[in-house]
Image 1: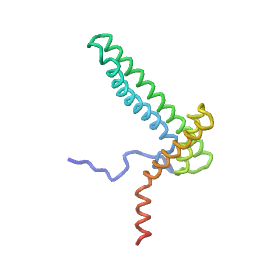
Image 2: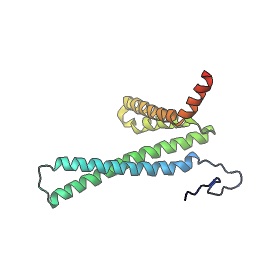
Image 3: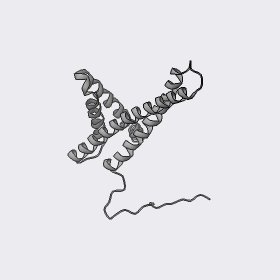
Image 4: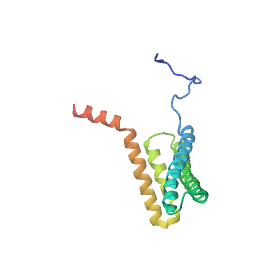
Length: 159
């Protein structure tokens, strides 16, 4: 039996918006990036641990060394991606509140500023590279996010 619901499954206060704002999505973004980073780092740590200990026989010291690499890499990647997500979310919320609008310009600006701040210890060249990386990634995301809308607009123009 398939359950179908034609109505919303939650109750909203009168006048409330049905979509989540950038501040509400920040928690999901930060947590998701931390979990993704931890999973990716653990897999990378397992790969590195097995590679570094390939000449050792299976023993407790080898297992401990592999486990240390897994936890170290997992924590490193979780921290890195979590920090990036925190910066991106903070910039996004600040830009949204400053401009009073939520659109793709906020997304691209927040990504660019995140890249610039994250790589600011690398001097002017690092800031430029980080900003370019943030601009590129968030621009690609904005294009992906609006692909159906853009495709529909192009089809209407051609008719």
